[in-house]
Amino acid sequence: MKILYLAPEGFDYSSNQITEGLWLLRKTCAIKEFWCTNAIVHHGSQIEKLDLLSKTAIEDVIPEADVILLSSGGDMKFLENFDYFEGRRELLHKKGIFLDGHDSNCYLVDPSMFKLYLKRELRYPEVNDLVWHNVRSFQFGVYQFHFDHQPQPYEKRDVDVSFVAYGGSSKLRQECVDHLNAIAKRTGLNIVANAPNDGQPLSIPDYRSLMRRSKCIVSVPGAGIDTLRYWEAIGFGAAVCTPDISKVLHMRFMPEPHRHALYFHNWQHMEALLVEIVKNEGWWKRLTGAAIRHAQKYHSTVARATQMLELFEELV
Image 1 (cartoon, helix red, strand yellow):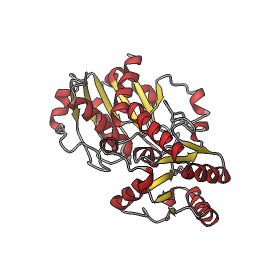
Image 2 (cartoon, rainbow, N blue to C red):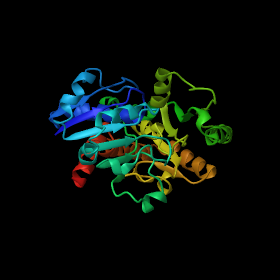
Image 3 (cartoon, rainbow, N blue to C red):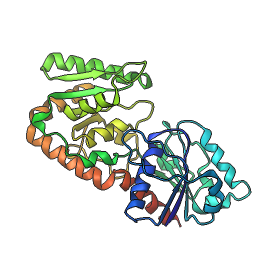
Image 4 (spheres, rainbow, N blue to C red):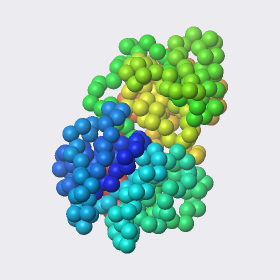
């Protein structure tokens, strides 16, 4: 299969992760060709050696491509890529995929323009009432670098629970910090919690260091329900503890409760789960080990790219 990705110039995790996944598939010859117009090396994405397709060569490649991928990228500049299909929109309807990584259940473009429309925030109850038959859920995943390193064992994780995030995207995040700080006083757990409204609480190196040292990582939705932290927690080998997003967000191969992840329905329930798993080393090891195996099989960037092509083939 030959894939042309008219990638956005801006950055979002969805576009960045699908670039990594497709590039890793190309490197193993799982796909015949991968042409990509833009790539931002960020957050550990392994796309440094990806050769980019020049704008002057796009017109030559469009007829050869079996799949034409477009996506959002943090702003609306991706719409400029639609100019390549003025007067021949049937190509998008026949070969096109649009990856919508927006932080809401709104639709950035008309899904009927494409063969396949991938929606990160595919939410209930709307998912059951869509007028389009080609919309599929497509969440963030786990970057490959997580699987290339052995996670820290239980005994080397000196932080029991951590939650550090940008707080400006949701008031719920500061509320979570307040509850975690109160839990630390009541239980004596070593908890690191911070969610400032004016920026990220830590540099990326310090953030990753904290994640590797944490037994449990709490994830709370921000502007969107799907958060990278949910997937990072699993990738860093910690037990992820999060509100039960399954009631709101449609997720394929969702990590299972108590087997791969901890899902709470109020702050008191969150406290009970965190206290129990921190003190139960056996459960912690079983859950985190199963979660990493599950993520590598179903939620890596390679798995995401493979799933995208499988979903496309179903509609051909």
